[in-house]
Image 1 (cartoon, rainbow, N blue to C red):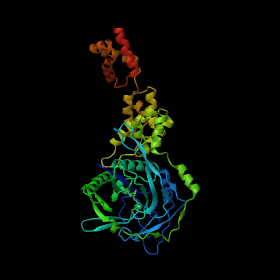
Image 2 (image 1 turned 45 degrees about the vertical axis):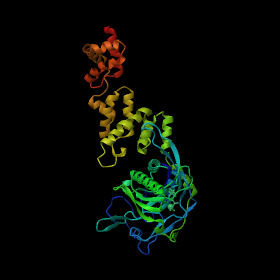
Image 3 (image 1 turned 180 degrees about the vertical axis):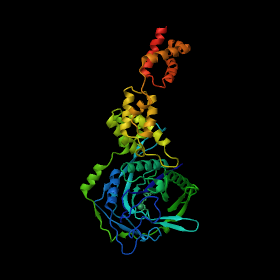
Image 4 (image 1 turned 90 degrees about the vertical axis):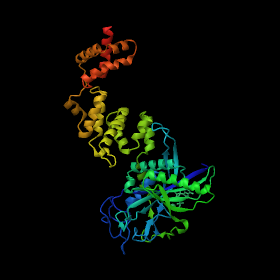
Length: 489
Ligand code: ADP
Ligand code: MG
């Protein structure tokens, strides 16, 4: 292709606050329609907005997490439009003086395989402003239904610079952004629940050119895979338009996921004139600089920073750190366990293998994945398990069985081992007898071993492990077999 795609994203994120942006009404996804409203949310005459300072702080925290500078003053503007999802006929937003300016997000492009680290790059942001979510319209065959529960929920709108150059980069950006926001506890970013929504702006230019082409905007893409498909569709469509000698029309387009195509909603000429003006009911907000510093100090380590630290401090491989740090709960669990028993590699392995396996095995189909906090797993339990394996009380094989039991019942590994009689057998008399039996019944393996094929000894270990139900101490078994074979010579 002779064109380069240029992409800018606008991402709306619902902030996790106790109440709405300008009223004390609460919000929770999935409640009966129109039960989470009040006079302010419904825009009844005579009501006045009262600013929720928690939303300001959460948005400032979001900005700090993304490296923005926090404005000294931000203020509220009315964005006027007439539509049933907004009973006041205007939306309160920050047009002229947003709370957060600039910033950037570190992204990682996928490597050539899942186990190989990809390239990292910083994507520039333009701003983050606050606004109120409108209500939700549902169109049926005969009616349009309106639910005002969502109306007034604090929304942060993150606007990137036109600094993404492929659909893959857009996906990497959204994943990284989502992770940063979840790490900071600002939103759960569940796209199915509308907690994170994305509009994508796409234009093409000739490769090597610095000028920006005419862009189109795809609205309300509600999953990362929809963002990817919509961008790819639009790149192909615009390339065709340009190839035929025509020019791209600046317009807003609607993505239809079921048809895998987008349609023109309105062109620039039909664009609304929102007649922005400063809201006379709300004062500008002056940010307390000391408080901004406190918010900054409270921020968690960023996921990629944490990943690099784990690689350096604990010599953990990328395969492990990329899984561990992609989820704050997992990496927090890792650190808590590590605080109790210092064995980073073993702990990381149990978390990324056994724990993830059990979590996915016990997640109900269709539900989002189970969280550790929904289970009986505790750092104390894992620390004890790693300790008993390292001390030789049980083998790694038996530890898997103990892990499953501990995950399900929350019982301590020591009590499970005791109850089930799982501790490793160090009874050399019993093991010796079994070794002699194995040697007698497999002369072929014995002679192969004597001929220098050291792996042949494994064929003799199998029957002993089977007879002891995996409890034979592996080191002792190896030593005994070698000794007995040499002796039999
Ligand atoms: P508007 O005022 O119409 O909302 P903005 O300048 O705020 O436009 O830009 C909105 C989004 O569109 C931003 O994410 C920006 O990066 C992106 N954008 C602007 N121009 C282009 C372009 N030519 N190609 C791709 N994206 C663009
Ligand atoms: Mg804009």
